[in-house]
Amino acid sequence: MYIWCRDHRLHHRYSDTDGDPHNSKRGMFYSHFGWLMTSRHPLCKKLRDTIDMSDLQQDRFVMFQYRHFRPLYFFLGFLLPIWLPMHFFQETFTNAVFVCFFLRYVYTMHVTACINSLAHKFGTRPYDKTIQPVESWFVSLLSLGEGWHNYHHAYPWDYKAAEIGMPLNSTASLIRLCASLGLAYDLKSVDPETLNKRIINKGDGTYEVKYLEEHVTAIGPLHPLNPSYRGTCPDPEIKLKVRMKP
Ligand SMILES: [Zn+2]
Ligand SMILES: [Zn+2]
Image (cartoon, rainbow, N blue to C red; front, side):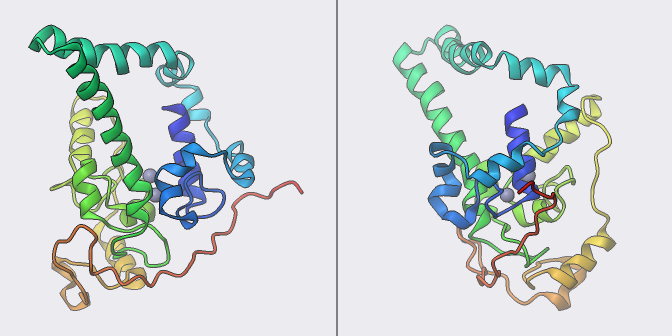
């Protein structure tokens, strides 16, 4: 949780620049999986230490998982998913290992990676055409709602990570369920008026909805790669927000 969170904060602050751990400007493969197989860009390494992690450092639960990652992974990520189907459903060891460990692992890793690769490339930018991330219903379908990425980068603090709560956004539903149990709190969301202003001022004109009918210019049919994407995003010149020592 700790490492993922630090990398994700870095990704949001320096999106699609060399400071971004999975900089999509370095190509599809790099942003999908290559970044996990090579060493980090020097700038990314430098900037990593500037990310404020004090909130998580004070969270005992997060730090416990960080300190005991290897044994926890072995029991919860490897042994438990293999033992459960063998014990309760009389599956063979081979089936349990290949399906519940390898297949599950490969699938979830690639789906997560799609958010960094496909959802930074193929889709529309109805909320902000000046940034690289896009809306991808295809990635949302695979990742239970994490593919509405133009919105997520426009408003990273919105708990839904998308404008709509449903369909194709069961992660937002899970957070609401946690909130009703008291496990999540202070859920923030954008108010519709602010959102409309941004869609009109900064959107690429592909916004689909209700109150803005006159603004709609292009909505493609549902296609995995969102053909309404017109590919006109300029390379972002994102200014570094900290001053680096020479
Ligand atoms: Zn992103
Ligand atoms: Zn994010």
